[in-house]
Length: 381
Image 1 (cartoon, rainbow, N blue to C red):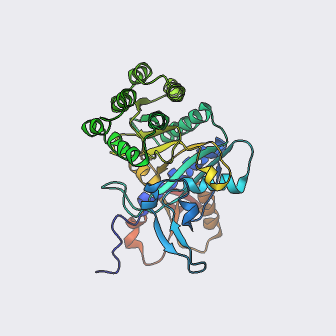
Image 2 (cartoon, helix red, strand yellow):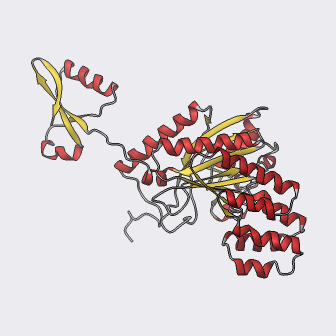
Image 3 (cartoon, rainbow, N blue to C red):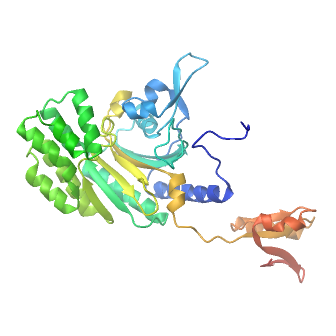
């Protein structure tokens, strides 16, 4: 096998794509900053106990593990930065009020999420801690919409659910862990025959409520039907009220999906996924996860979202960017000052090294610096 081959679903990012990704990263982090979100940079690896705390089985399967040569303990290469940020809020910052945090970094997956997905996503996201009301869910979704709009992503749609509806039904019916896992599987797959078989022995209220969940997908009519036909329990009423507030505030296409239980063991309330033209999978995932911080010794309400910058770069609007400016190699103080002036203004200026004149096209320059009338001026190449 050639030594330069990379592992499957791992690839290099070449200059054009890398430049687009870096511009998106800078734009989004600046957007988060002006909204009051402070950046944190967690480590790439941690002891597995803290890395997977409160995240459920799915993240465990996606995490690369290794033995720390200093302590002999098992460590993990992060597969998701959100638990790390929750640890920072709960264990290091110790703020009593609201904390707004953002982050950007590489995560690693043992297996790709989809057929065309990478095992090395570049995750960027924003999280809010310390507020349990619908207002923080609204702020996070508004920030997500602003982020995707800033990147020129077209044809946005938001699918929103609430894990509290299924959780209320399962707990009232005293469903055991094994049966709950089976129900989660068929609901996520919208497997109606499988759901009918699993609920055949349930009481009528539980059976009817569970069988209704896959049908509660769509716009306001799905929410209205949920209010009419689901049990009138306080926890379900509160979940539907939260969804109604999000629908009322929405500025893009939105769908309700009460069978969307992605991250059920991790999330505690509203969950959402953003979709756009050009990608089969969600461009962003998010929701409320109030229970994670408790595992770090300090329970804090939390909500946020994350996305993969590499996928985002594929669907973001491409900027028309000017080429660079070619400058001659010369010991000339005036030329050096002019080059510095252009670079300070954001222009790319490349000094042509002797002997490479025949390879100019590789430099991507469309202009050059030429001496005219005793001054260095920019002209078309």
